[in-house]
Image 1 (cartoon, rainbow, N blue to C red):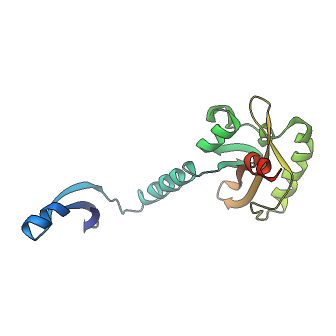
Image 2: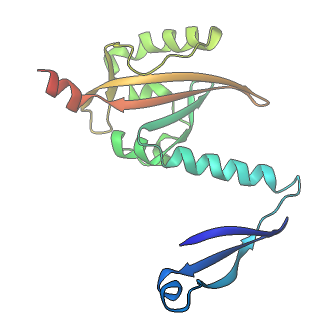
Image 3: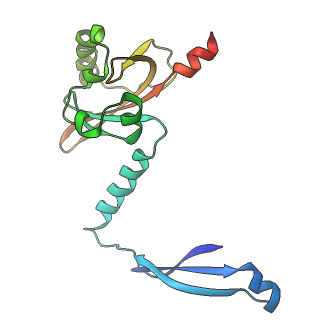
Length: 171
């Protein structure tokens, strides 16, 4: 097994013990090595936290899209997979790129209303929402919304789940 052992405020070591050595000698054999520095100063901590949360969102099982002023500023890998666009194709585009053409004008009004009165909208509200892929195909979607005021302005996070399999199972 491996477990982190804090040696000092700036270094963490991993200690590995072999269960077999315990059987033959009565005590576990162990070895130590430096895993890497653990920065704790004020300048590196925010970047470590940002990296951690970016990786966390990147690994999310649902598509995650972050918007600022109606434009896409972040997407995760699931967004690329679900919608068929590359990340570089979506960044800077209006969110309506992911909305079927027939709903785009109405969506702009809904988006503007949400920005003026943000509120949490959880998954599972049973709204009939539809996403549009790059190839033009559409899929039923569940979309959770959340808003955050930052130093750069308001951002909106949309978590998007494809409901195709669920809807097929219901019929």
